[in-house]
Length: 216
Image (cartoon, rainbow, N blue to C red; front, side, top):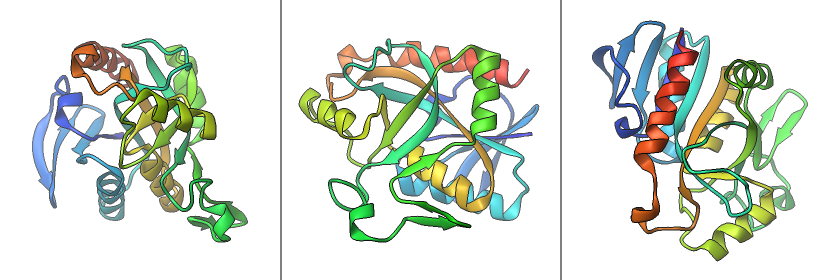
């Protein structure tokens, strides 16, 4: 059974199931999955996953949705990728949280500052099954508003895609011990705010194809 999460229902119009409500979230129960619409942003994603996982057993969780590709990433509009590591770029100083001397998350001997891995085994198995590449994601509540800003973030953190939820989802998975993976379809170039240049419909169609194979 998969717990599926997306920021908006607009990214999951193809899912079919029985509607239900869980606290403040809307969801669907379908064959092989439970789906929650988390809402946009880091807090929303972390709250939805954590609240659900504290009440229901979660075997594996998948965050999916559209994302922006950074300039120079080589990713095409409509392309689907898996995210292997997320960077929370607006936590701490411009250089990150580590210079301040304390981590965002402690788990055993591990210390996590701004970088949070998704489950490597689950990510690798999905990548092999779907023939998808694995990239590094960057998460901020404030998205890039220009190509120059996007380029600077990509260079500083070595990231290829930008979203508003990924790092929070990855950090919550680590804290809860949930096997988590992240699937993103490229809808736009990060920093380009002209939605006439975006390809949201194509990206959602690509998500539909990938999700159908995951749920087979």
